[in-house]
Amino acid sequence: MSILTGMRKLLALPLVAALAVLGLSAPAQAAPPDRQHQLIETLQDLLPADHQQRMAALESRLGVDDDLSDVARSVIDPSAYECGPTELIDWLTASIAGWSDDDLLGALVILTYDPVTYDALFFPEPAAQRFFGADGEYTTSQQRTFRGLRGFWDIDSSDIELVPAHGSTLLDTTRVARAVQASMGLTPEQAQGVAEAIRELADQDVYDHGNAPIFTFNAFAFSAEGESFPGVGVPTDKIIMGDGVLEGFKAIGLGDVAPDAILGHEFGHHIQYERNLFESDLPAPEATRRTELMADSFGSYYLAHRRGANLRWSRIKQFIATYANVGDCAFTDPNHHGTPNQRTRAAEWGTLIALLALPPRYRILPSRTVAALFERALPGLVRPDAPPSVTLTRAEKAAATA
Image (cartoon, rainbow, N blue to C red; front, side, top):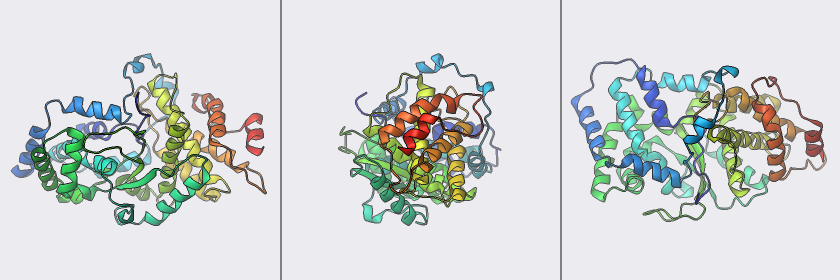
C-alpha cells in the first residue's frame, strides 16, 4: 500500500460495530421526543449514497485496509483459548445499558460520521491548547511520558504529535463541519447541516452533552508517510488519545498507570512505522495480533526499564492489567489484537527483558533488537497451552544483559 498502516485502535472491534452489537440486547424504553427522530433521520439522509465506499477508501488510505479474504485462510480454534469479556468492556457495556433503542441509534449515526476522530486526526488544536482527560487531569502525566518515550527510543520522533480527542467537539459546529467535509466529501452546506444536527442530537443528558465515553473510547497511532488528503494537506504523524478510554480505565481502578501504558503502546506502533515492522506473511488476524502484542512489549519495556519510566512492581502489575483489559476474543476478525492472556504474556515478556538491564549503564536495547527478540518469542506467547507466566530463554537473557 502507499502508506504504512495508520490507525491501530486498542479495542478489538470498530466502535460502530461494537455499538451495534451492544444495541441488539439493550433494553427498549419509551420513545424519545419526535425531535430526536427527526435529527437521526436528517443525519441519515445527509449521508452520501456512497458513504460506505467513501469511508472504506479513506480508511484504506489511513491504513485500515486488511484483506478480509485472509480471514477464511486463518484457522484459529477459539475453543482452544481461554478468553472472555474484560472488566473494561463490561464497564463500557454498562455505560450504555440504560439507553433506549433510539438513543443507541442516535449514537450509531454520530459514530458513522465520527467527527471527533477526524477532527483530531486532520485538524488538531494548537499544541499549547491541548489537554488530556475531560477535565485535563492527565495533561501533565501524558506530556511527561511522551517526552520520556521520545528520549528513550532510538527513532526520529520529532514529527510525532500527541493529540487529544474530546467528546465536547461534537457541540462545535465549525469543527464538526470541517471534519465531515474532509472525511465524507460533503459540500460546505451539507457539512454545516450535519454539524448542526449532530450538535443538537449530542447535546442531551443521555449523551452527557457529547461526553459519553462511547464517542471517544479509542486511542491510536497514525502515520501518513507524506501523503496528502483533499482539503487537509499532509497530516502530521500522531498519537490520538480519547477521553472515553481514559475514563474507563479510571473507573476500573487503573487510572494511575493506564494512560502511560496506552501511550507506550501507541508509541510502539510508531517504532513499527519507522522500522518497517508491520509487514508480515501471517493472515490478517494473526498479523494484527503480532503487531499489537509487539507494541505491548515495546510499551512495557519502556515502563519497566530503569532508564525509562522505572515503575515499581505494584505499578508494573497495573500496566500489565491495562494491556490485558484491551484483549479480545475476536479470533477471526482482521483487527484481532490478542486475547487478554496473550496480551498479559507480551507485557510480562517486555517487562522481564527490561528488568535484566544491568548497572551501571542499564543499557537500552536498540528497537530492532527488541523486535527481533519478540519475533522469536511470539509463537510461545500465543500458543493455546502457553504457561500462565513468562520465562525467558538463555538467548533472551544473554541479549538483554549484553
